[in-house]
Length: 253
Image (cartoon, rainbow, N blue to C red):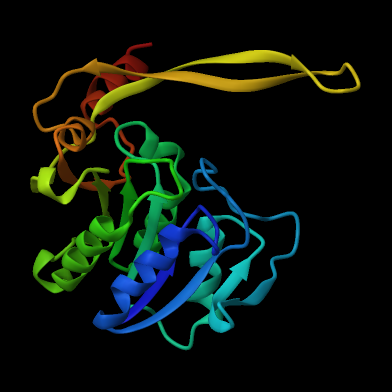
């Protein structure tokens, strides 16, 4: 198996190191990831400045390419230009922090997997439900290895990616895998007004994550209960139920 690994926390993050180690027993691994933190950039692409691919070493050993762009840039550049052949799978992560519910829309980790899906490659995003970069990644790495090792039997359809969120719990409390839907939660945001040392005003984002509707099979609930949530996502954004009434409304106006 030829495996492309990327992320949004940057090529030097503990999460991507753990994911690479988990993938190596499964095949040939190539790493193309942002050269810096790119969390919450969504599916942004770099179009107004040049992209550079810089060889990156970890502990003196070649590790991959660091890209001065977004996670989606990394996948696009890797598949179209850098790699000698198309990867069999794109894996993104392991992200520091859950990408359940609405967070999947903002996530660079999920967007990297989305880009792989748009390019016709089976793609999986992995996230651990802790923002602490010192968190133990071993459970999440084992989950990633397990799921990618089942890639062929999972038969992920074209246009669909798997969004995998792993709880940050002791192994004794871990409950296993659960297939879920995207939860219905949202951020209630506000911006704190601050002043820099020169007295100029700036704004710092804060928010509270709230559940809008309790669903028994929601991804965020499953993670909170100690399960790994596996959510198949696709990006057909059309509200099909509205097509007929909208056509009738337009025709009758």
